Amino acid sequence: MSYPQVDFLYLNENDAIKAGVADMPKCIETMEEMLKLMKMGDFRMGGANGNSHGCMVTFPTESPFPEMPVDAPDRRFMAMPAYLGGKFDMAGMKWYGSNVENKKKGLPRSILMLTLNDKDTGAPLCYMSANVLSAVRTGAIPGVGFKYFAPKETKVVGIIGPGVMSKTALAAMMAVRPMIETIKLKGRGIASINKFIDHIHEKYPTVKEVIVVDKIEDCVRDSDIVYAATSCPSGDPMLYPYIKEDWVKKGAMICTTAALRFDEDFIMNRARTVTDNIKLYEAWEEEYSPNAYNQIPIPAVKVMDLIAEGKMKMSDIDDLGDVLLGKIPVHRKEDEIVVYSVGGMPIEDVAWGTVVYRNALEMGIGTKLNLWQEPALA
Image 1 (tube, rainbow, N blue to C red):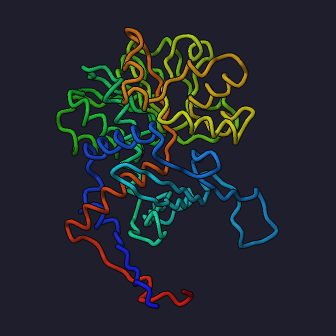
Image 2 (image 1 turned 45 degrees about the vertical axis):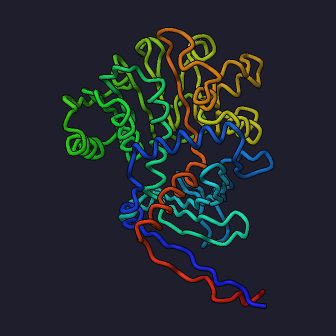
């Protein structure tokens, strides 16, 4: 009996860029389709609940083994598997390696790879660099939210944490709200702020004004969109970046992929909480209860804690997929303040990776590698 050989496509970072991985408008379109399929149930992620963010290796604070890594900020290894149906019909996994000390070596904090696999055989179809892919899809998921919830005439945005993730979120903002004229920046270091300013001037010449502010309050006031992507240790919510309701413009949209804190009264009674996938937050609540917000500092996780405490109901939180499918209105009331939480999911990487992989096949980009001519252990 003969067995078929297995080949797969390898895409380095330049290959992925040539294949369109940085195409933000197309990625937003892809994420919108993915969110609809997800809401319909045509997907699976890890864990028995099918909604797990992934499986992470955690390291001890100290170890008797000198070679073993110890716990530190952004020190992680994580496997993030998923399957997405519909026109994607693809299984895959993002592998996430991260160490903040990488910056001292001239490397990105995180080094990411994506594997796409045949859904039936499990054979690899593609192995690709995923740093740019992950960054772009991380911006595109907020982009779907900006498209639906941000004021139509958005002119002023505030960005808290001007790093790589904020660059792709800004690309998404400009893709769906190209009339933006003013960008306010709140950062920690002048080097990262200046780098971000240079990026704005290079990529978005229609932006008329860039303002650096010292306080989160100044970044939030008068902004139509507020985007927060700050690095913050979890554990004590009182240390998370804080936004007071009085600072927020009526009708504004606040989006975060990271730690952010609001007063409970605002969250419970006046803010509209929207998630990228409510089941992801249910999974986190299941995995980290009680007080999941202490470990996962995203605002919607706080809402899940409040629901667990009986202070809120599941009907007090909306899912973006329901908006996209027309099950709930885009806006529930005039001048509502939307707080949109983005948790990040491997299904997004599989969706966007599938588009990039198929582009590469059509364009003849990448290197074909052979796994075997015939399996030795068949």
